Amino acid sequence: MNEDQKAAAPNARPSPGYYLGLVLVSGAMIILPILYAALTATCCWAVYYFATHQFTAIWLWPVGYSYYGAMVKIVASVTPLLVGGAVALAMVKPFFARRQRHMQPLGLDPSVEPQVYALVGRICGQWARLLPRASR
Image (cartoon, rainbow, N blue to C red; front, side, top):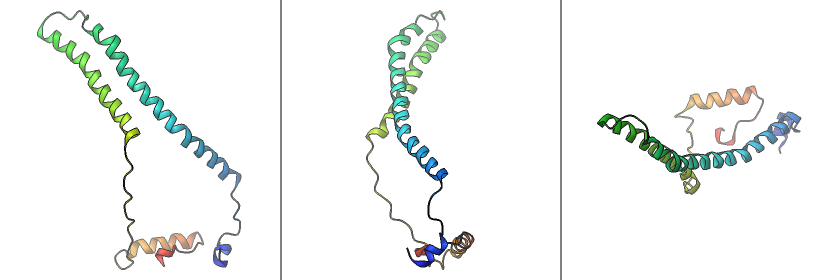
């Protein structure tokens, strides 16, 4: 740290609230993938359960033997399978997705974006911090 940075940040020790927030966010980052996997498994199980237990029960509905009765039975039995299968597939897909290539970060030119540089300068001035190296 140089002298300007030490002067800008006299109290470098984080507060207990910061540590509490850090622990909470770390816990959430551990719990969220577990919850997503559980939700995905539940969605897949629900589609399987419907296909094995409820699909044939729909065909026993007493709606008659007319064209419209058959259409109601077909829509009521096939739609949950198609929609549930699509949702389950969309939820499972991220587990097998490849990492994307990182995009090259864009640099800003002060002659093209003077308002952005002025805004960064005002913010850094209000917080008594140095301008980022790329903005000098």
